Image (cartoon, rainbow, N blue to C red; front, side, top):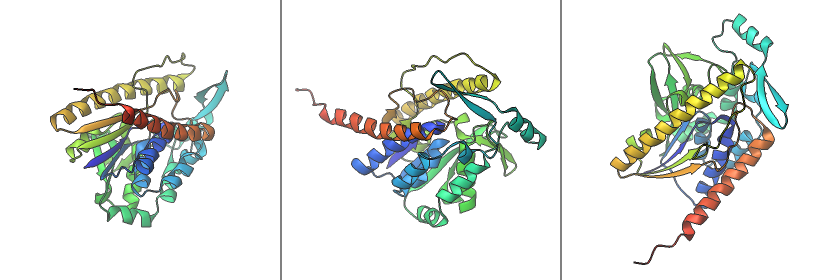
Length: 303
């Protein structure tokens, strides 16, 4: 069994789309299992359907309005670098309505439903491939994996949305008596889950560099500090997930093929820029091509 695992990473998911496109269209890799966290959850249903052109158009055209029904921050550009500032009016409006978060992301749920049709959902549910999204159950303090096989269309779309909800900037969802948030808060790279479900070869797309090349600029405001803190914690979680994944693979005779980003794409994955995301998709495709070309050129040593 072969699995494709895509990590969380917000707008950087465009790079993962490009990598997956090359693996599936040029190398003709066929996957039995698709697992995603956060932005990875948005990609996997369409990849399983082979609707790569469709999801590419979506990923390279989204903006803040596509995601947020109430965006809690403003985007400022200074010296060529984009940073976020607090949109005080939107934050106060959200708190006045009784929300527990700074912003709301109901537009993203609508986008998911507009992109994944009921017909496509039925095709996936009754097909041979399994699609699984990662969510964090804050009430029970545990990570949960939601399979398309266990839910209706409306429910599964909601789980995809929940997997992407980067609280406290996006919606906190109460479902089945529990509060749920972004799957990356518990498992950024669900390699272990793929192997537990029987995968013997796993292609893993990780939306950060293999070695840290980042020296963040000083925080400008509380939101900037919060995003820096969250990125730091998620990076630690991701490294731990990878170590655990490697350990489980070694004990289950499974092979893992890693695809890291070759450069730092962005320091704030909540900023959705059409031009940059279009470039990242192409960059992911070319990187996968380059990496696999290099591997094929390695000749075995003479005995």
